[in-house]
Amino acid sequence: TGPTVEFADSFIPLTADSFADSGLAQLVVIWRPVNVALGTPSRNDERFVADAVAYFEAADIPYIDFFHDDRLGLDMYGKGDHYNADGMAHVTETLGEYVRDLLSL
Image: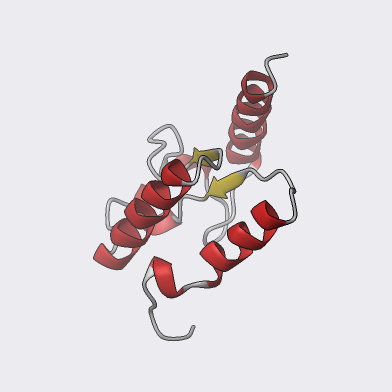
């Protein structure tokens, strides 16, 4: 793990800007780490996600926020930050619903 950086100093805005400049569509997924499900999010995580959401909203970039999805409880994790079968099913279903709504299908 490297040093903590602010969202604005991360690679994410540069990548998003590059995609936008190239006319490429994008959908950002903000994942929920297990420490959030445990009820112990770090201040850095919370600030980074808040800055990311503000950036994506200002840039009109669609995103799905699993970070704040309380349905992803500790029972949906396997090892570390990886989801178990229930977590994968929830993420897959939620992503599908979001994309269908985004595309108005």
